[in-house]
Length: 222
Image 1 (tube, rainbow, N blue to C red):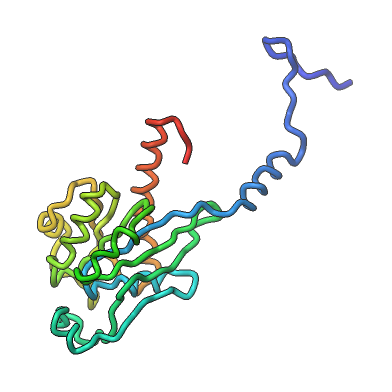
Image 2 (cartoon, rainbow, N blue to C red):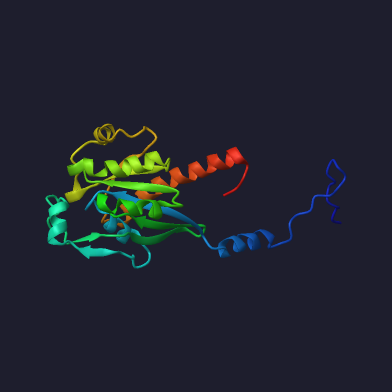
C-alpha cells in the first residue's frame, strides 16, 4: 500500500512538479531570443579593428571601407602598414552568438581622429569596449583609452600581435597607457577567431559584472 505524502510542519503536503514541467521551462528558455549586448571595438588607425570583427562575426560583416587617397596618405601614418589600401570611414559591424541566451553585437570605430565626431553615436548603448593596440605606436590608442575612461565604460586593452609578437611587456604597456589595475591588458591575434573570442569574453565578463553590481544596488534585473 502506498503511503500518503508526509505533511510539512505547516500541515500541507509536499507535491512534486508534474512530469515534464522542468523540461518545458528549459525549452521555453531556449526558445527566447538571446539577450543583445553591444560592444565597441576601438583603437588607432590600422591596428586591426576591421580584421577583428571579420574574424569572429557569424554574419558577413558590414564595413565602410574606402580607398586611401593621396591626401589621406599624407595625413595617416602608413609607415607600419604600407600594404594598407583602405580605411574605415564610418564603422564596422558584426555579431556573434555566445550561447542561446547571449549575443554580442560588435561595432568598430574609425581610427582617425578626424572621424571622432562619430564616436558618441557608435558607442551609445554599449556595455563594454575593446581597445586594440599596436605596440609599435602606442600613442595612437590614447584617445580611445581616454574616451572609455571619461565615460566610465568598462573596457579591456588588447595588444595585437603583428608578425606574431609585441614590442613591450604587458606591465610596460599598462604603465605607458596609465590604465587602472582593474583594466585587463592582454595579447591577441586579430586574425585568429579563437584568440578574438577569448579577448571579447574578457570584456563581456567586465560588462556583466558592472550590470550585476548595478542590479545589486537598485534591486532590479537587467
